[in-house]
Each structure stands twice: as C-alpha cells, then as structure tokens.
Image (tube, rainbow, N blue to C red; front, side, top):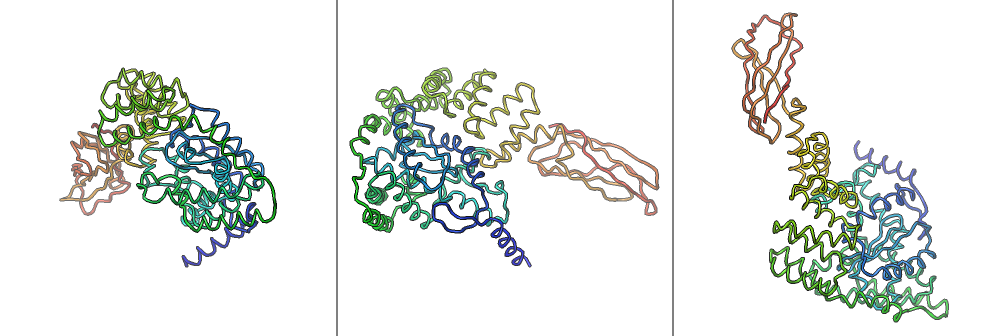
Amino acid sequence: MKRLSLVLLLFTLTLAGCATNPVTGKSELALVSQGEEITIGEQQYVPVQQSQGGQYQVDITLTLYVQDVGNRLAAVSDTPLPYEFVVLNNSTPNAWALPGGKIAINRGLLVTLENEAELAAVLGHEIVHAAARHGAKSMERSMLLQGAVALTAIGVSGTDYGNYIMEGAQLGSHLISTQYGRGAELESDYYGMQYMARAGYDPSAAITLQEKFVRLSQGRPSSWLDGLFASHPPSQQRVDKNRETAMEIKAGQERSWIVGRDTYQANIAYLKSKSEAYVAFDQAMTLARNKEIPAAENRIEKAIRMEPRESRFYGFKGNLLFNKNAYTEALTQYNKAIALDPDYYEFFLGRGMTHSRLGQREQATRDLIRSNQLLPTAIATIELGNLSLAAGDRNAAKQYYAAVAQSGGSLGQGATDSYIRLDIIDNPDRYFSTSAEKRNGRIVVNVVNRTNIPVSSGIVQYSALVNGKPRQGQSDTGAIAPAGGIRINTGWQISDADHVDRLNIQVVDVRL
C-alpha cells in the first residue's frame, strides 16, 4: 500500500509540475517555479557570499570587468533571469551559481585563468547551471526523496554548516556544495560554449580551461580541491566533449573570435601582483588552525606589509588577538577591517564579541545584530542571548537560544540547555512527566525530570475527585537529578472501594 501511495504521489507531482527546460527544450518535472528560484537566489546570495569570504573589495575595477563579461554572456542566454556576478575574496579556485542567476567567482580561480575567453567559459558554464535549473533540480530531488513538496523540507542537518551557519542561510551553502552530476556538467559545458560563441568568444577556450583543470586536479591535497573540483569534477571526457563542441560550432561559421589575453592580463595584473600577500594570509590561517600562533602572527604581518588595503588581513589579526584575550588591541584591528570593508559579517562578529568581553554590552549587541544581518551564525546568536540575559530581558534571551537550538549543530545542545534553564522557570510543567499509583492504601505521585538540568527544589500540585468530592494538595519535590525521578506520598488514604476521578498532577514551581 505504501509503495502504491508513493507511486501515486510521484504521478500526481509529474502531472502537476511538467515544464519545458528553456535551455535544452526537454520536458521535465518542475516542482520549483522560476519565481521561487529567483526568490531563493536573492535570499541566499548575500549569506553564501559571506560564508565564502565576502566580496573582493581591494580592486573594484576587477569586479566591474568580470561583471561586464558576465553580462555579455547573460544577454545571449536562453533564460531571462536577473543575473548578477561578484568576485569573492577567497583563494580556493571556485565558481558557483545559485538558482535565479546569482553567480560568483573566487579570486583564487581568476589568477589561474589566462584570458578573457577562459573567463567567459567559466561564467558561461555557471550561467547554464542557473538557466537550465540544475540547482532547482537538486532541490526537487531532495523534495521527492523526502516525500514532500515544501521547500522547508530541504535541510542540511548533520552537515558542517549546521555547526556554524544558522538554519535560514543553510540552503544556499548546501546548493553550492552539492556535486553536479556528469550529465549536468556536460550540459553546462555544451550550452556554455554556445553562449560563448554567441557573445563572440572563442569556444576553444573551454577546451584549454578543462585541460588546465584536469592538470590542476592531479596530485593536489584534498583541501585545495574543496572548491571547483569538488562540485564540478573535471575529466578527460569533458575535455574531449568540449573539443567536439568547438569543432561543431566553428564548422558552421568563420569569424574573428575573441580571446582577449592582453585585456584579461591587464585587468588581473593588480591581483596577481599581490599573490604573495594572499599566500601568506592562507598560510597564517593554516598555522592558526594548527595552533602555531607565533608563526601565524608572523605570516599575517607579512601579508599586511605587502597589501595594507586588504580588510581580511586586519580581521584575521583581530581574531588572533581576541584568542589571546588582548581585547583592546583586537578592537583596533577590527575597526581597521570595518573601515576598509563595512559589509563583511566576520569583522562585526569579532568586534561584537570583543565589546562583549570588555563589558560594552550596547556596542556588542549592535555589532552582533549587524553580523547576523549579513550571515546569521550560532556564535553571534548565542552571544546575543547571553547579552539579553545580562540585561534582564529573559524573553529575548529565550528567543535567541531557541533559534540556535532549532538549527542544531555542535552549539545546538548548549543553546537548548540555556533555553531550558530559563523556560523551566517560566513553564515548569513542560519539562516533567508525572503519574500516580496506589501504594499501601495511599496515592503516590511520580515526577520525572526530562531535561539535562539538575533541579534543586520544586513544588508539585495534585488534585482529584474522590468519591465525587474534590481533594487537592501540594508537596515539595526536593532535588531531582537530570533524567531522574522522585516519588511523593500525597497522604491521601484510599481504599479499594473509593472511586478516584479527574486526577491531575502538575509541577508549578522549580528552583535550579
């Protein structure tokens, strides 16, 4: 019967959600509308950028150049989406697309490319992922596997994201980290090359690009491959298919194709000139993770000397100082970082935590709220709960702790306990199970603590109709251990002939 129900569900969804893919022309299941895709992309674009290092701000002309190339390709794509293109401040060679045409490319990938046509190959590939609904299809597969059509059913519980990023921002991180299937990659290569040709770019650049990726993916540590090659695995098959596609395109037309090596190198020159500074920064982060703090400090100082305009260098130096409890010095570094880039969550998170440690609650709250506006994190939200509690606002504290508890992750249990410590005082009966039994002619009440929180004392009230007459009483519980229970003798004498009705037991007061 269950199998039949699932078949009927899938059949119903198929009838209700068939649509023609605007890129391939194929009829396919479409449970997520284009309007929903656009909304998802718009909602997730900023949080995902923030989780990937934020936008690269030092050389804005580079971003404008990338946007110009992207817009030329978007203008000849098959799907009119509100395309956007940003350069991210991240050394990992990666590029990604969210549903609705929201696209990003890392500075770490830009420095590996040789010419504008290769950049067009990357951006054209990502445009197809958005235009051909590859991200939306991933969501739809999740929805079908879970047997639900609601977008809220798609979660990433159990992943690393849940340990840090709050629930509302997890979907975007899930989408950009999901590995595309071989069919989707070949499809994006093929149609991306068509877009390249329509915009005048030499489609052969897609061949040299994939050849480069195949070489780069060989013999690299897994951490280096976490970006592009994890979600867009290169292969010799893709190189061969791209070669066939380029021959097919060029066979039908003769023209002067755009390669744009000199133009590209001119636009990437400043970033390349600072490569050693970013290498030092990446080394500093690795050293810090390995607890080699003096070496990390040495590396970040070198990075700052080589590129004093990079905000992330000062933010990282602030983090090192914060972890050494050098809060005043950390504050100086966070202020420098924010002055250079007032739109990156981590600087506000660090400065907010620093203000909190210095007892500056108002400034801390303001910064942590701003941090969460850019990227909601469990760390900032728990600290906002702590600050609310210190200010005497128990209700606000409960709301912050509850938000983290619902998101799960490594901080979720601590937030749950913090929430319960407050709510068990306000609503004690929620956290105890009660029962009654007759023992040696008396009514005995059993009370069990269902939390991880030890209780020092409490009051339990009980009432009933005994032979039609109301009877009530209350007793002190005494201490109750986590997941422990107690037995309370009510003192009510009950014979076998007595009739007990409407017995009600309720914990009405608790002290921790």
